Amino acid sequence: EVCEQLILSFQSADNYSLKKKLFSYYHWNLDPSKPGNLINVLSKPRTWTQRRTLDMRNALNNKNRGFSLLEILLVLAIAGILFAVILPRAWRARSDANYSLIRQAAAELGKWGMEWSGRNLESQDQEDTCVINHYVDSLKGYTGGRLSESRPNNWFGTEYTLFPGCRSGGSENPVNFTVAEIMPQENQPRNPFTGLSYMHAAHDGSKTEPGLLYLASSVDSDGFINYYFVFTGAEAASATDWHAGMGDGLQPTFAGIRNGVFMARLRP
Image (cartoon, rainbow, N blue to C red):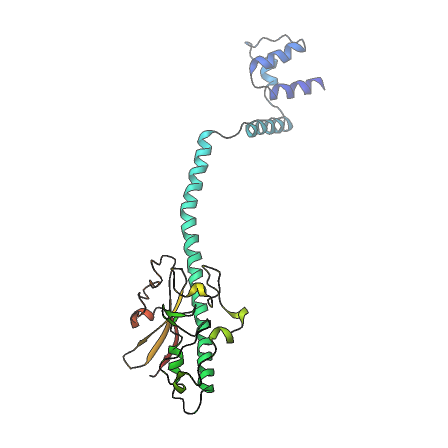
C-alpha cells in the first residue's frame, strides 16, 4: 500500500528534485545516474489505472492554469467577425419584416376605406350626385387624418371633408363619420416602427416618421383613377420621401405608386 501511494506521488510530481525528496523521506538510497534505477521505473505509469490517474491530474492542472493572452485575442477576433456578419443581416431581416407589416396594414385599411365609401354612397339622398370615387378621394392623404396642412381627410379626426360638393351642397346631408369610427379599435393596425395605431394624429405627416402611410392616386392610360398606399422607410429624409421607388412628394407618379399597396381602380 505504501508503494502504491509512493507511485501515485511520483506520477503527480512535476520535477526530478521533488521525486528525489519523496524517496529520501522513505529512506530510499537511489543513484539517478544508473540505468534501470527505481526512480526511472516508478516515474513511468505501468498500468492502465495509473496512466488514467496521471492523465486526469494533468488535465486538471491544465484547466486551472487559465487562458493565455493569445487565446483571448483569438476568441475576441472570431466574435467580432461573427457580429460583423450576423448583426447587419439581422437588422435587414427586421426591417423587411416591418415593411411586410406595413403592407399588410395598408391592405387592411384599404378594405375599411372602401367599406366606409360604400356606406356613404348608400346613405346619400336621391338628389345627391356623388359617385364612389368622390368618397375615396376624400380619403387621400395620411391615415392620421390630414391631406395637407389646411385640409383634413376622412380617415381619422373630428373634421369631415368632401370635395366637390356633390352631396346636397356638402352641408344639408354631409359626411359625419370617419373610417376610424366604423373600424373596431382592436382591429386598427399599428405602425411597426412607432407602435401607434395608424388612426392617430402622430401619423398625419406633420413630422418625419418611418412607416407613415399615405393614400395617393394617379390616372392610368385608360383614364381610370388608381389608388395606392405609399409609405416612408427607415431612411426617409422627409414625410414625403417614399420608400423603395415609390417616388416623393404629395403627387407621386403612376409608376412610383405602383410600387405601393393597391386599394382601388375606379372610373372617374
